[in-house]
Length: 74
Image 1: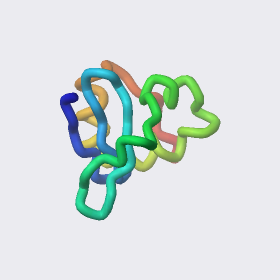
Image 2: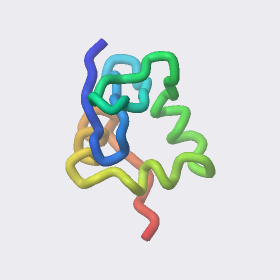
Image 3: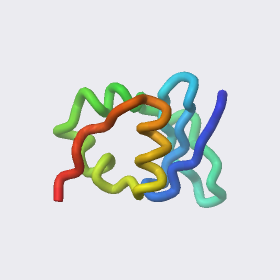
Image 4: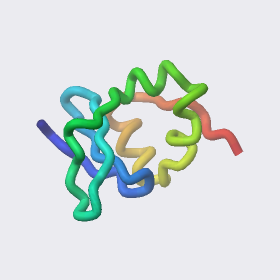
């Protein structure tokens, strides 16, 4: 696992698998509650708010790893 915190959305991202995990109060991933970021990307109906909530820094982190993200809805 290679983990990156996405603090703006309270999520930990495994950059090797694309799995995301909610952060607990200590910033640690809740491993038993994962969702893959590419599945989220494919289901924008359910995930648009999550993507829209990414800070610029976190968005750049995700784009740097995966290449692209959906446009932000204002």
